[in-house]
Image (cartoon, rainbow, N blue to C red; front, side, top):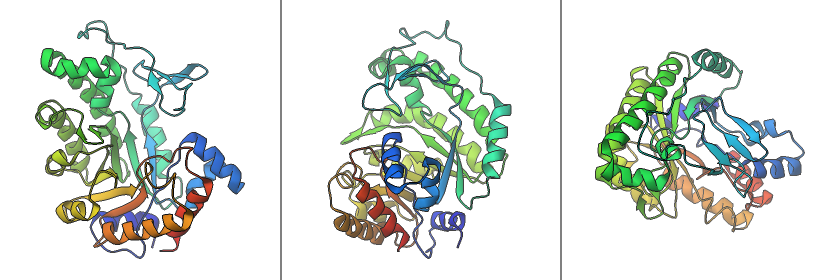
Length: 335
């Protein structure tokens, strides 16, 4: 069975010969692991047997100096600290709730089309997602600042609506271009959760975030493609909403937050879950043999009747021993 076929059947809640899986590493962990294995960094995904590839449409950014990355919206991310891949915002662009002096970027649709065609035709039997990271809520706070935006929801609601509408317009232009291709699905990255619940109330999420997210999902679904959402933290209060607006795959599922058996019982016939192998409490700390047992137990729970893509709950960070990455690959391959 091809990898793409396994993922497609898992999404249809069908049993596959093995549970499809995906392992992603941070840049520092990737260097450490590939040096240990004596393989090229670009070869890791194939070495691991990953079933999924993503093509990011967060394009147009560049490093303005070492450790400082300016993205396509002009946000400067300080990557000189521990986080070398995302970083922290160096300064707030929208210091006031006012868009009159801010010019939104225009996506290079020609470049996106060319990149997508090359991606689709790369000869690999993987399930292929187009991707927008920092999709909506995250893009808004990256421009305005988290604390400011959280206050704006209550103090400057019309500004928030205008800001989100502009972000939505930008995203929809990309989505509309991509879903006309032979891409398999679209992957959205937008964190609404923290360890003990949502960052904002369900009422606020439903008022400001849900309508725009629904429009993006609708564009994907209308073309017969699959929707996937990466969202860290506990978002149990809005899982039903996400199903209602057309979500197919929820990633990431943190076992330190969710009761996996209950999650599978409550939503397993409606959602495909992706993740469930903890980068927070399992991968950095347990021994390889214990890790293998945990992975097998997780697959038994989440893989019942399909609807599961196994993998770490996030990109694996440098605190995880190489031996555990190798054990993870071994146990997923030997199913």
